[in-house]
Amino acid sequence: MSNTNKISAVLPEADKTATLALLEQVKTKLPFLISTPIGQAPKHKMGPSSVEYVGLCLEGVRTYPTKMRADFDAPEFERDVNLISQLWSVRIAVADLLARIDDTMDAASADAMVTSDKVYELLKGAAKEDGAINELLARIALRYKKQNKKDSKP
Image (cartoon, rainbow, N blue to C red):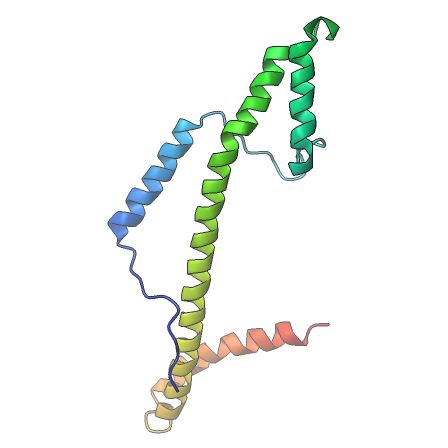
């Protein structure tokens, strides 16, 4: 009974450190990025269906500047719209990277769990001949007790 390994890779510590440093460098290139506290997200957000709406409003500001109130900050509005446009390609690239990291972690997790189940079964068989293994088996079995408690909750 063989298992098809989904991924086999090694991330050297130096490469992990370098990658994290590059991600920090990205943050320094985008110093204006903010982190909104949970529950304090803006009420008005621009979704995909609003892109044309916002673009047409910007066109209206450019075409009819004299129709805007004196306190209307047209340059700030244009900066916001341009920033959204510029960040969109960055967001797509970061989302792709995150999806690849998640998929890789999922594959490695599946491999580790399948192999761990095999190890557990092998150790249970070996414990019949070597009682010293029982202490480790008891600790491993705790995972199944926790899992069964989760499964039995309504």
